[in-house]
Length: 198
Image 1: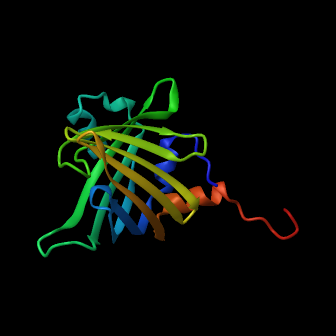
Image 2 (image 1 turned 180 degrees about the vertical axis):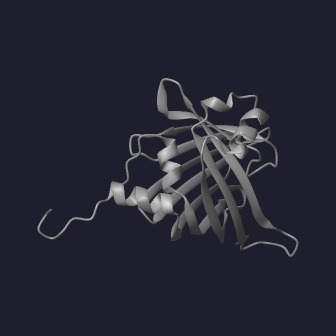
């Protein structure tokens, strides 16, 4: 299991291209829907103009950010209609708490559920899974991300709205291309040893 000092390390490790397969359970209808997507994650340093812009959008001091990511996605779902489109992109910035680098705020210029600027609360749990809670006007989304191995990331999410739980999703995300930053991090985290033990 991978270990991370903070959320910045977690997202640096997530950089690269991923193929996602998911199952979404629509609880009110007692139905399940499958789908898939291709996801690209690019690491952004704290001085990247996109990070600074996101912080300004949220009236946050950009010097408090440790960086973030640029994420693009394109996917399909089983019940899609002809005019439905599951493509998009977002930039997010991490603002860790001053007294605990393992938790803080995640700022985005658009949410996944609503196309408006949104700020979520994150923390790394005792198993180094990243837990993210995002409040929207009409719903709350709870997500947990973790690595089963360096090239397999798992994700669960639950959407709560109108006073009750609406959907739950399980995603299996397989890395199909590694970024240079991720490759370096993986080598440092999992060094290769000779059979002799050196």
